Length: 87
Image (cartoon, rainbow, N blue to C red):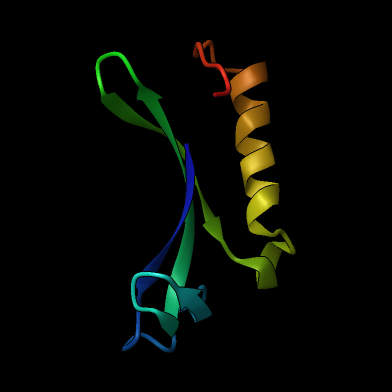
């Protein structure tokens, strides 16, 4: 499972990765840092593990959220031996 989370940094305007982004949790645009998370979920045991994450900073690396997801998927397939299937 992949998720894009905004960490609220409304009072940290001088931090390098803080930018105005839409937050579904806040139901509006906030100052925050974006994180794209990759979580492995075992549907049989309902256990889950964080397997990868990327800081979302398009001003610095030019990547959108889906670029980070593609990178995490490539890393899973090419470097980690984690069993998974799409559902």
